[in-house]
Image 1 (cartoon, rainbow, N blue to C red):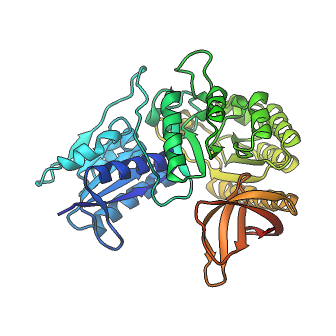
Image 2 (image 1 turned 90 degrees about the vertical axis):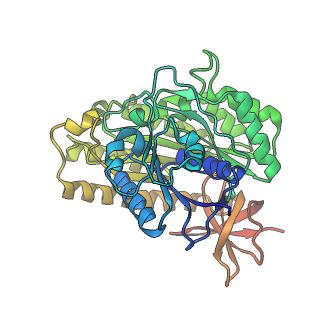
Image 3 (image 1 turned 45 degrees about the horizontal axis):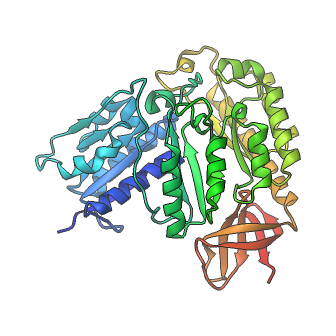
Length: 436
């Protein structure tokens, strides 16, 4: 009989891309996706460890997979396995533990899984010359937009971040392979692809001194594919005027920048080993807004980093309040073993961290609603995604500048782009109307 599988994915867009690759590889090997609540013959948990909460959620997901899937072969893969494999080894019922170096061979490990359930440890540390592992993908099941991982690894070593230890050195997907996959996605009918990476702005650094993300984007433009391209997170010092101009001038590039800030206080930024100042960040955001007034500018910000006093927190709030930021992703500081900040003194009281995070989220809501309101009466191309309320005939989609748009429709043309005018604003996004 055909064996069945389930994949549980935690964390970032890179993990989502890699899970999609595993899904496709298993199908090519003759497996089928199990339908809930049917137990799978194999369950893969693609883990995350970026915060303590993410590690806790990964452990919960692993234990739930063991509990709900009877005699399934359970595989725990990804960043948690890379950083702290012993913590997974100690969970009874895990049969395969594969880190990010070995994730691509998971289908092979599942095919060879021992009936006696002997635990397989597929672990390999990163080396300086670790190559980019291309995981072949031809479709992206269950999604209206596709992801393409074009970069992996990080060498920034921000003092709070475990990612450089779980993803290894910076390395890039060769451009000819990137273009090949984009053509496949276009042929499959996708109309939006998100280019993603662990440190996307470092794309091309291993390919040659003159190769950059901008170079790849220019090659994509020459192909004239029926796709719009969205860029995932980019560090502030890696967004130059040439990229801003390209986004402003090219209708196939989404007007959307997601830029990690973490703190608006220079002293805290220095302790974080962040290579940007408050003034540099402000100048970048203002430049983007002046050149592309309707661009979405999302910002990551951290609350309660060790040594963050009331003045530093106030500096962060003031900076964000004064800038044309569109939305915030707020994270409380999470001490990760193995990072420099885990041993920093002057920890902020947990109750105060929670309070500051709540203040930042409230500020983020205000900025988000201001951004929505600034788009009233403008027209946008919206990618149709799913029903918002099928009984009432309301559909949900996303504009190129990351507006969640709800609009009336009798049918769901999932994955298609339509032109809508923004007519209203709410906490859930904006309402749109078609102009036929």
